[in-house]
Image 1: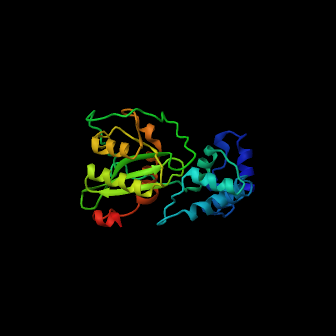
Image 2 (image 1 turned 120 degrees about the horizontal axis):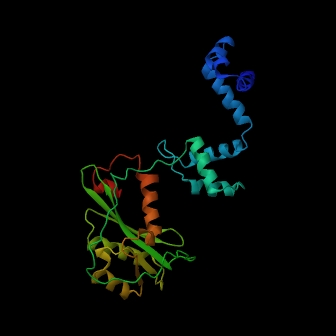
Length: 267
């Protein structure tokens, strides 16, 4: 633009002698908004990521829900790979910021992390995974945990899940108003129903009190399941299920009105 050329030439002049942008716009009878729109258009014309951004916007809109973008940078990166577009994660995140299509993080205070740790109250199994999440076949390794979600009536709903490390499938999911032994038992029973015959996965959990008591440990032993536990205070030892709950809350629950009660939540 001629205006940009004038401003570039003025950089060689003393600051006191330069024209102000508003004066130049006035002389050219050009509105400020029109000037910036034209600059943006010209900039986009020479943007090497222009087509990539267009594809990213299509992907983001594909995964939008209730007028919110729910696709994180990893999902967008995978979708771009399928289109033959190979970008580093940092580049994808930067372009997402440029397009303003980032996922909105859920309210951490509203859905604060539930902790079932009560010290040693029963059997503590060794950590057999050591953060080596490398299962390649389904039903070899499962991860379990409990999380909470606030309801509109100021109570909490508790979700107990079993996820498959290899397939990422949710093999069991139970909901209750109380994080008690019944909730955990129902979760294990659902897992058993959904497993193929002769499957004996390793079941990894944190050191929550529910996972230390005989009703749980004996139930696993009766079905020849191998028990494994995270180290105290090391949530990354159970990262696959922690990631599941994070995605559940950021991509599904965030932006929804609070469920009226547990019946509405279960539906």
